[in-house]
Amino acid sequence: MDLEAENILTLVAERAQLAEGVEGVRSVLVTMYRFPSLKNKKVSQKTGIAIPALAAVRGELVKAGIIEKKNFLGENGRTWIRENLNLKFEHDPLPNNFESVLTEIPEEFAFFNKIEEILCNRPEPDFTLDQSHAIPSTVVNRALYLLKKGDIEGRKIIFLGDDDATSLAVGLLDLAEGITVLDTDKNILNFLSENAKSLSIKNFRVVSHDLREPCPMNILNQFDVVVMDPPYTNDGLRLFLKRAKQVLKTEIEIEGKKHDVIGKKCLLCFGNKPPEEMKQIQLSILDHGFIIKEMIPYFNIYKGASILGQFSHLYYLELTESKSTEDTLSLTLNPIYTSEFKKRKELPFRPIGFHFIGEMHFNNQTQLLKNDDLHKIFIDALNHADLIILDVYNHVYKPHGFSAVAILKTSHASIHTWPEHGYISLDIFICDELSKGLKVIKFLKEKIKPTRSEFFYMERGIDTSIEYKSVNLEGEDT
Image 1 (cartoon, rainbow, N blue to C red):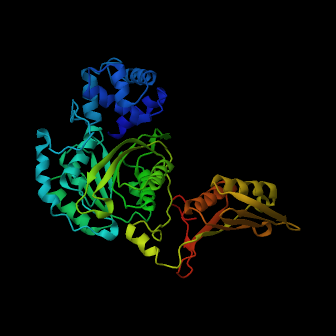
Image 2: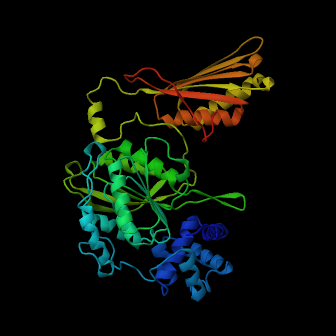
């Protein structure tokens, strides 16, 4: 979907007050294009949009001149969809549902047969990175599943890791607006790049990147669909979900005004776990703003993946939050691969928490005389980050100056002011998620508004030398 079309459909969604947003409007158009004779009830079933909301969307599409009537595209409507949504299939490309995976490639997609030989030459899997190759039929099935869902035609797709080479199968369809692959394994990237070139796949690029490091700025808020088969740990899944949320488009600017975008998709492959661990997996998905639209058990079959039992489930996720998490903190010390967790069991030290320190400087010194206001902002910052406060002690110095110390369920936080120097010092230690400490700092900076500031953090309780690292907020030096 080109930018102008996305702008138009964003406004249609807002005028129709459609909770599903621009992606909901697109799903209505895709359904009307592929199934022109369907009545309201069937369109509602296929899109998941309630009939009254569906009627409102169709009314706004008529007003926008995109479709001829509420239940009829017309030739102009079909042309608009072909040109702006870049749809090719005027019918369901795969009439049968994926209750079970396809064992034979449909005749219409016979060109997939040539990928099997290519997949046989994939680089040997690196088990320390939880790599294990999906069999060729699984790779093809993933591409066909996305096609049936309408998530390839005219879409910008990013693969967070792709040792299976699913990106090549998607690229062979020649329907995506662009395909990007991020992977830390250069052998994988070279293999994909060389074969994409030999297959004449257009708009295909690879990026060497470790997802434990901050994402490159030029891929944030850019994509319609994420495809990922992450490490086989909950920590690995959470990292990949966080990065997926960052790279999916959650905001669009129209005539200088920012508009929220929800509904972008994520295709997740993840293995089976015991019930209590599966609960944590699903909570991790929800915690990052995704909902599970569909789950097909044992969809993915792997070659020699004993750790997965040679199978994994396919999750079709939808992002329901419009605000993405943007931080620039390195997460390289957190174990995410199965092999790393096994090694950690043998180590006497593990990270206990994160220690943040910071300094704020002010030209307006009188601002620091408002002790009650500063105390309230300090407490609000801790509550904003969902940190549990057990007790608070504060003291006012003579002639001026103020200190407050909060005892937290996960350690402590303190703030100290020197109005005569226009200076505030912060000290926060939390045995909790690193992101919570970052939230506290961001909140304090936004509310107190220092002239300049500087923040650092370090991991505590690990068997390494003490080293503070600079915290970079919102991509700007603080």
